[in-house]
Length: 267
Image (cartoon, rainbow, N blue to C red; front, side, top):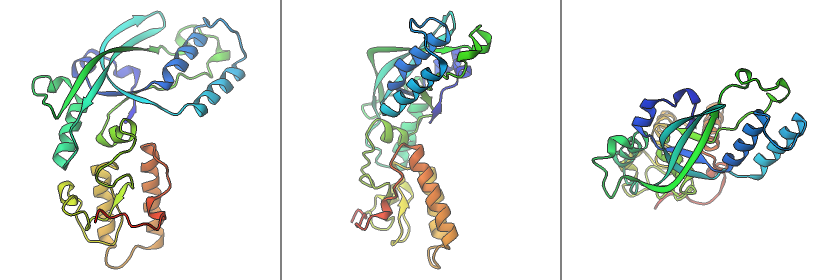
């Protein structure tokens, strides 16, 4: 996933109705920053103090995500407001590669599924609506240069995938690897076959479900390349760095599950 850019908020975006993830912890601080940028906040503080307050807020507040979809756009004196409705997602059990790809089609466009949603794939509207303002650049709104160091943090994210849903909405719960983020691809009693992840035993393959199908395939190709002769130390370090980066991207602890001595195959 990635932050939603203001330039993407157009009519065709509304028509597509993609699922977005909203970090609700950023909504309040965005509002405060926008008031400061518009010189409307009732308390006047030096910019450096505002930056420190915002930094401390970010450190103290862990992200909390909700699934929403855009419904309308309205103009505001300082930019535009995107209205998003909270939705209850039903994406099934992710029991196979096909199920994952189908769920991601719904995440990409709920409009395309309006006529074919089933009990397994649905995005049900709730009564909760969020209004997220996207202000114009400070340089074009007459804002004093002394406060342009303030930045409005991203709170809406687009291009949501099943690994994002598992990491941000399901607290990392993954039935394939049981939270280890890796599997023994030869010891899953047929589960690996459902995701085209099967290969020999004795290696730790990135989980195809919570780490992502594409990432798993790249990891699988790497492990197969060195399966018989062993992985050179330099290549193994590069792989560990790739896995750590992926874990960080999804918001997981970067400590490798393979650092533990416990057996993690689904035997």
